[in-house]
Image 1 (cartoon, rainbow, N blue to C red):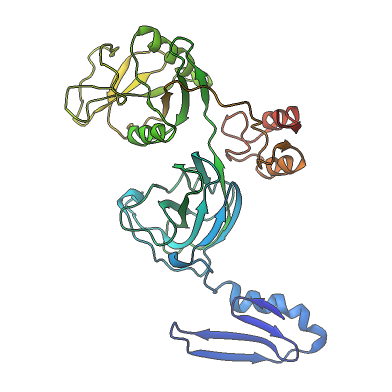
Image 2: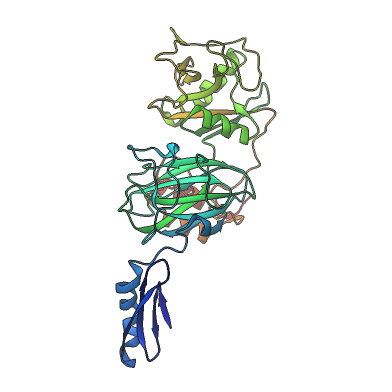
Length: 382
């Protein structure tokens, strides 16, 4: 028997199409199919009668599909309805809802920052969110939400804890949007990872939009946004992070006056005995500039709103007494301990796309330089 949605092609009977309402009232249409052409009609019948209309199996948040680990996962919201809450955290282009949503319960394999991306995986104009736990999220519990990150497709990042389950909601920006494709889940590798020989602390850099999200991520790593005690530490951060990628970066640091306007403090309690404000700063321009950024090529500081305005920020996370993790193969894309054909296949499948797991040189695109890195790491991870 061939099955597609609510259609079954049965021996001696043919294709049965069931149409009904939610209460279960069905109208059965029976088509007699000659035995010699029965198998050829199965696909056609299913396509015509069911696949374009059948509800997705994980349409309801209470029936989310369980997934785990890093990799590529398939989705389809064809025939799906909208059952998730709208949320202010998902406000993009005056729309807070995610329409025609399907649901996944994802279990994290390790603690760290992860990225869920639809980039290159679909042509649907998507919208996506993540929530704590598994199942239907409560109102305003959104961890992360995104509309357009790579053309009309979505990408989001959030901090995950090993063994913990999170709900991922995939849907469309428009109420009329339906489609299918795939999304990837992968660990976000720090763009910069250095140890200060003077204080022994580890500093890592990650692209994170808001100051609050950056500080929350830093705490997940067991640290805080960087606290700067003197000029030497300021110079260390500026030299290692300020011109990352050959571009002047805006760097999130920990200095803030969130608790008391005009009284700046460090989140780890470091005494506020040193500052390096740019001329005329802090000025709280327009009010609400409660957090500090370092201007990369200058090394001076500026106060900013939590959102970071229109600027992309590199968060500088300081982990007290931390040392860099043991060497790993970044080219081991499937995390099986060896760089081999399976990893090569994944990389080639991600070719010319902005997919972080295969973007081994972190330049925003999977291309020949990434292939060269993978081939150079070929074999057992050391």
